[in-house]
Image 1: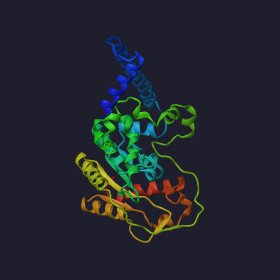
Image 2: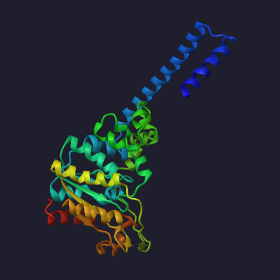
Image 3: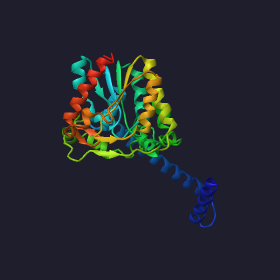
Image 4: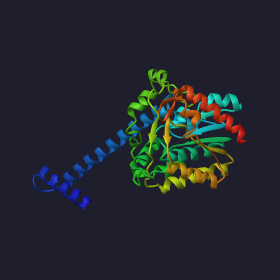
Length: 330
């Protein structure tokens, strides 16, 4: 239908331009013009895409730089996976000093198990970490279209990392075709890439081995949450189980942790209950700090209701290392 409409319109243009009849020369002229236009678009797309890719991999700070380092470079003995709670709660220099091993934090704010598993696939393709700490969140298994849309963050890695393609394709069955365009992978990243290449951004947004400290002290009362049920995402649940299985197959020890919150919960959150069951069934060590008075009695440990500040994260990181000893994960 669309093809016949295009052909009809094209013929009409030729007729109008040639005074009512199409000659062979007229047809060849306009066909040549059309092919030239396609060639110009292709060359521009390819050239701009290659420039963007060059500066993408030249970044020295920021979220994209940390993803590049996680997928392509780190060989740390201990890796921290998770979302913003991983990013802000685990201080690698403390873990490295106490365990006498290298440590890097690959946590990525706003992401979840889909992103974590893509990261794991790339890491295990290159090497085997001794230990992975996976920090999980409330509503980890809630179905949300947004969590699939966020996989666009991985588009720049699609061509070079064949192992993550099935996960990125969950965003849309059309992604592989859209990526025929060299620019598409960087569509929403122009400003981020510019920032990641700037000395100003590097000075202002530095992290410590992937960890970003938060400096505020929370000054609001304890929050009190009533939990609710929601639609489970079976893809996320299955991916979480495979994450656990792949760590075991690779010989990587795994610790699953639910970080502290300055919130009181009156019942077990349903995703956390599911994670607890999976950990129990698969005989994986799991630590739950929700409602833990070690933290809920200390508002000064928090930056906001969901995140620890510098003081809290240092205390928490040391506590995790203590737990590693007691769990014989060290």
